[in-house]
Image 1 (cartoon, rainbow, N blue to C red):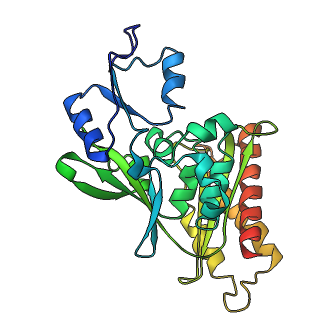
Image 2 (tube, rainbow, N blue to C red):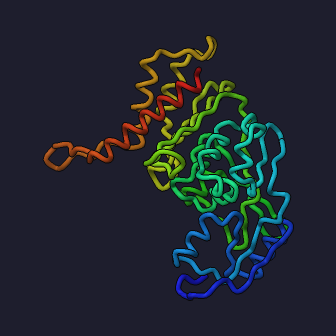
Length: 297
């Protein structure tokens, strides 16, 4: 892959199965896989990327739907945001459907895919905090029909990476059958990139709360201590009741965990956060508080 040669892609391969796509990537190590192309084509049009070859994934029907499997939903990486935003999918994984509907204008939602959102790993990817909160895993397709699974959070954090010739085939998401909420704040009215986003899911079977904050760091952040603290305050046996003060405290807890105060200076003084960072912290607190309140209601 060259970022300097001012020429278009020299070859385009259009496989019809996941294994054919892997074989094409192995045969053409410089090739770049492309599904919706919402991120790839933006890089090409801006001159940042000039792929020597492309492997189109749009004809692979096996990754464009979903199926149930052992209490999980196995989501094809080729699912578009528009498809995930429909009511039947929303009944399955509400938070992911809400994130898909917030992913941008119709032309982006119709083209952009779940796998592309994960593979590009843009901090503002709306699906990423939802997948982190759900503790989803990726099914990676490799050579000779090989399959392996890794947590989504491992890929986003760089703990585990895709190997040469591998593709994200599916995303495995546990079906919690419990309230889920996704909220995001943008810098303008209407669809736009997130300034901050929060995904929150309840796990009544384990009496747990899972929260992930997106867009404010290179990868979604899990405030684990805040999750454990608030889960202990919820009356799981009495309609998941909680005192109003705990909602506000949870928001502040999450915000402080994700955007901590600066370390004290050598003279013992504590520097103040810049106004823009303080505003972002307040935004995260508000989103977290609202998300938990909606989930519990």
